[in-house]
Amino acid sequence: MKRKAAEAALAYVKPGMVLGLGTGSTARFFLEGVSRLVREGVDLKGVPTSFATADAAKELGIPLTSLEERPSVDLCVDGADEVDPKLDLIKGLGGALFREKIVAAASKRFIVIVDASKLVPRLGTKAPVPVEVHPFGWKAAAAALEGLGATVELRRRDSETVRTDNGNNLLDARFGPIKAPSKLATRIAAIPGVVGHGLFLGMADAVLVASDEGVRTLRPTRTS
Ligand code: 5RP
Image (tube, rainbow, N blue to C red; front, side, top):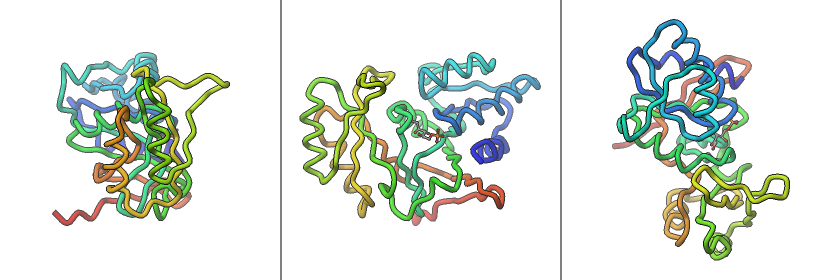
């Protein structure tokens, strides 16, 4: 399913584009498609959203550039952990939310690729909100998140504290179904030490959802 969604996103790729390259297993399939196009001679460059994606892109022969060199990205394609009916997202279970948000925001078009299991009636239904915090005082940030109603866990792997590509800690803040994502986003962003969070609101231009029936394209209904 992830591969199907990723393949569908290739239809948006045009010669000469600078592509934002997302992070995660679904984005990896997109990278493989881009690599195929590059091998066919299509002129494309990628801005990676993580060290892992940069490594994968190099391995796959995708030419890379940076936001310093190319501050305006034509198209960013990335996965997500949850997608709600407004096409607001939770991202960051893969830990790359900070760079993912910067690259998506710098892109003229942001296309999200998911399988149908990522669709939820409300953000927070299944996933925690990943929050990247500076290691100095992360416990105070965790307490502030608890004050907003979350159950908070410091992300660890094999009992080691996970560090992001930016050298920060990750807090997984479980709120349950979130009634007002934009209010919550403002409150999380205001906590001292918070570097970024995984609520991506009003950012997706389309979500490509793969299921047994094929790939559906969802577009946001924006009033302005
Ligand atoms: C990484 C992310 C990923 O896009 C998200 O976790 C989805 O991953 P996958 O495609 O492996 O399900 O936000 O920070």
